[in-house]
Image (cartoon, rainbow, N blue to C red; front, top):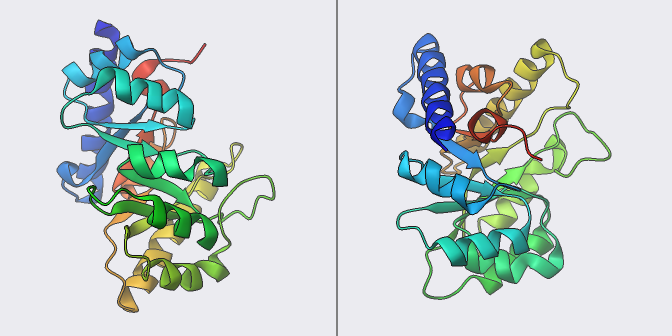
Amino acid sequence: MTQITDHLTKVRERVANAASVAGRDADSITIVAVSKKQPTAAIIAAYESGQRDFGENFVQEAIGKIETLDLTGVRWHFIGHVQGNKTKDIARYFDWVHTVDRLKIAQRLSDQRPHYAAPLNICIQVNLAEEPQKSGIPASELATLATQLRLLPRLRLRGLMTIPPADADLVTVRKLFGGLRHLKEQLMQRGFELDTLSMGMSADLEIAVQSGSTMVRIGTAIFGARS
């Protein structure tokens, strides 16, 4: 598992270099280690290397890891599609949800968030490329949903998230990331207190950081290819 330590070091260097180019503080960017389909030993190796934010796509797989590992100081991020029958577990076990795109889902997460827990941190997923097969709301519906989410007592709207098309070239990726940043700025001008842009993965984290990302979701570059 020493490979994971080496990989994490390289990812941190990539983030720091990209931040330097953009005139940003590298500490303002959180690396979310995407640990879906990875064994608990890999998560422990990353944790022992100082990693504290982990992203999971599948609820039942994540719960098994969270309960088994019980790692102090870890923040668990749900980054998969939110199904209505999974909201209770997501609201209970996770600290962040990056993929809210429906009011009904947000209401369920708020209603089911345990009273003893802090409000659940939320990002709205925006489908900027308007891919029909992908989750996320169109940009035209963002302000309405953000206004509705702000009224839910057990949620804290933190920002926005997007995933570019898998086959997008770097020019298109940069344009989409810039578009998400612009949408965040528009909401802030309307009084929303937002501090998060969740965008960027292993292949495009430099563009994401230079475009203003505050959370990059990194799987392959840390853990290697999933089996």
